[in-house]
Length: 411
Image (cartoon, rainbow, N blue to C red; front, side):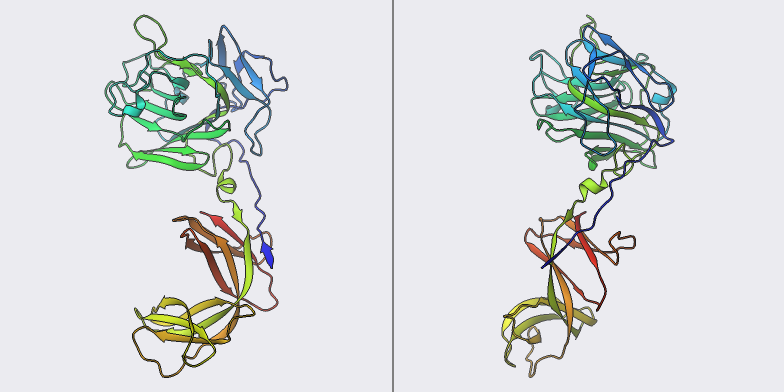
């Protein structure tokens, strides 16, 4: 038995020309106060840390290649950062907001009245406890959700919620994540793809989590700053109606282009489509002519009367192949029988050596099979199979004296 695996190189993309601001928190002194959020994009969008308890850095960073240095440790009390408004943060076309988040399992406060989507017809958005992670304040006008946009963490459900306002009455609410109460780092991205329909896409860990066509609304960017770790909306009495975020953030990046799985701060494609070890067996390939729409039964036995049913195929009006794993106990005779018709003699077919790749599939999961002539797999041939929750097989006729490398990936 042989096992074939294709080695995949993990690549972290460099900063793109579309990067507006990027906060990486790469310093050499963890667990020391942080007074400034340094923008590494070169655009000078530095943020100031304010509050009674300053931010600190932690060496606990997301476990991805290229993510180094430290991460931002927010305490959830009176610490937050302010990034001044700039025209770069009021885009007219495509844009992306992304960051890594690790939610703390313990929170400093509980209770209190808050409603992050007041009046919005979604009961899951009405909660008496929420923590604001990022928010852009709008000081020019009253907005639908009290800010231009904001990310809120709901500890009771472990979900991250994203709100965006179009003005006084317009806006959208997205559940931007699955349950984050697992103590792990997760990547979150909101992508606005400026196109004919203007689509907002929500990503978690590289997967598109949710999307919605929103038309061409005018976003209420305003001229307020971006708050990191503190709620931007205050009531008439001046009190904060939400909680400061308690947890960790890293690789906060704003871009003026619509990024995706392979162009986020980390290329997530290799982590999403992990290769599956496939067992390779020898097999016979049975070739026969099949009429279009006709069903054929494949039998295996030692006599002209046939024997065990191996499976059924539907003809497409030409040459058809059926593969059968070859083992020591398999009888050497095969029979192709048109269903519902009498057959006087075994059907003629040719026998060829073939490779069978067997793997455990998942229901309704699409699998991508790549066959390569060389280990670096520069020119791969691709085949797609839909999983059914059981052991699946992929057969391919062999070529003498030729090496092949296979990988089976979830797509």
